[in-house]
Image 1: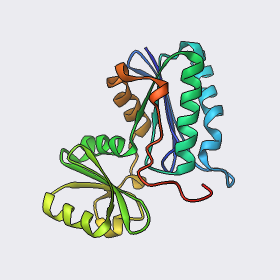
Image 2: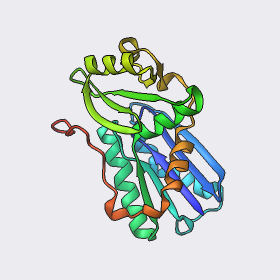
Image 3: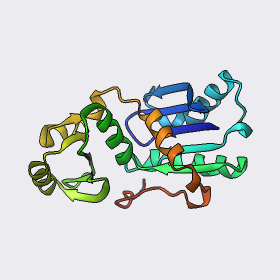
Length: 206
């Protein structure tokens, strides 16, 4: 099976190509010259497939991060995945960034992971006890952390408030984790059901 995984929802873009469990390519792309990293998504996917002699028609599974995260990045990810999967008649699986980061945390910190990402308006997108809890007030998140003895994964903005580990300071292989999680759910993959995960509505004009 050939899996193409990509993520433009977080602070960097991740693109991974796998064949029968073997990672053929794993790329990380940052913002360049005032361009958001998602602007390089198509060219990056073309490069990693070309370099490994993989044609688009060879792809069996497309895996993408569906959010939460950058609204621009979420739209780019899901739109490209839906179009590709429809044209190639292959499966498509969406995985939440919260689940991806929780898996990264389990590998590095152990079980009982809590993920909290900045949701603005004094809220965090919260994932704990293997469940997305929604956008939760920071004061409540702090109470949950204190009462639950969690290992916390967060971002640079919330780390001073919540403690724990900022994923932005770590070198987690998030693209590879995305691909692994999607492959375990590959029986569910239908591009028609692939939708962005907007826990909160996009801001006006986004």
